Length: 599
Image 1 (cartoon, rainbow, N blue to C red):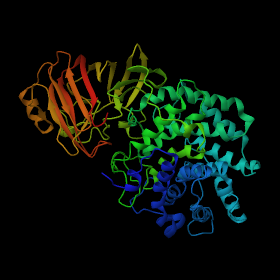
Image 2 (tube, rainbow, N blue to C red; image 1 turned 60 degrees about the vertical axis):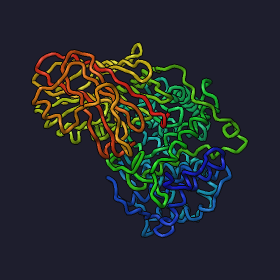
Image 3 (tube, one colour; image 1 turned 180 degrees about the horizontal axis):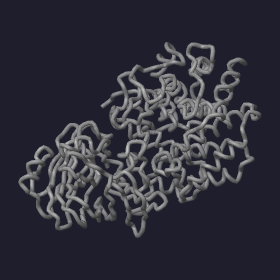
Image 4 (cartoon, helix red, strand yellow; image 1 turned 135 degrees about the horizontal axis):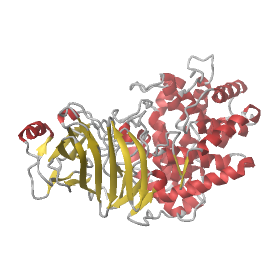
């Protein structure tokens, strides 16, 4: 399925292959840069911020790949155009001026790439500018120190700008008190074992890798030696993180699909691109290189490009439902952060190393600091998850019981719920016969003990105690205890399987199953059974759910369209019960295994 042959036919084995992959991603942007300059616009919609900010993204996000490419001796032929466009964007007198930064401004995010450019590649990203252009550039990025930033990984953006200012001889502009305050604040989010929460809400997602540790290792490797103790701490934490984070990846390269900003796609390889500078003894350079390369290669056969080679918004296919409000048409180019290893020469340890298989020390890997357990299944990973819910964004990216590397999660899990269609890995309640539903929106408590997760969570007015029990070979259990103050319908779902090109296949002795549109009639007819079970095989794997308690339930197979991030059509098996007021215990077993094609 060669949607963009220049990227997808690239073997991505040698350093030259990855240099070419970087150019394959960037060069489709050239017509926009040449025609529109600093106000480049794909004309494919917008985001929550103004379109000038989207233009900034399109111009500077590719720098995350182009700077390492040039540092390592790769192509620099596009730098004159880049400098011209950047000069336009930072010039208040130019019609293409990007505008000033303000509190919580997206422009502050993009200033980090310019700070990185000044810090690492002043020979292309600073010295060739005219004096007036330099003045404009410095004035534009320096303003990041005088606005309020979002209290999360954004604080690193100011730190990178400050490092860039120091590198070009403008340390006089650096607000040292702000520098120390931001770094101290970041320390407050450290959870242990290498894990950070991304801000005071402490959510766990890929921002650990492609933001917190990526920026920290940049700072540690290229900042001034005056902060040696903190730099050592950053490297040690990154080493701890690497050992556990490796279990978020499949042997074939795919990563766990959890958290926000997944439209950045193989930015999830960014940590591994710089992880060779971390301090740890358990992972060899060959193992690190293998995770990095396989993750990028895992995207080659997915329809993530336009016919012109532009990255689209989405994950496994173009999909705006899974995008956050801050995802503009040019946002996906943060994927370029994956190519940091191009800064190292052909004779470096990284490029001389042979790729090694993914190290898998055990079938279950508890990660208490991340409130989760990773379970291996057929060369892939299931992440049993109880970290904080980031409720300000799409809750589906944080509030499910499980995520995996092979069966993608649904967004908008309760969209169509009045038609008895539900997303994966949720427990939901309805107190009005199915018209309205609620699911997890907060987890006040979670702990990982003895290879189990114990959590307390809230769904609207309902509080639930849940125990997750991973087993072996893709099997696991969930037990729920709760007290209802009124009659309710309760549904629990398994993983979603893909029906993109072929209908899902029912497995097991009972080939008859209720579909979503039949549920209302079945409820009226009281057709619920004790110990129902349902297992279904899709294109990407098998998903099963079975009742282990004595509560009568309906076994139903739901269909979902355009809500799953890895497939536009999925089937979700679920169990549905009608419960009266009082105390209840639900106990369900699950199965999730990859198909042969994904393992």
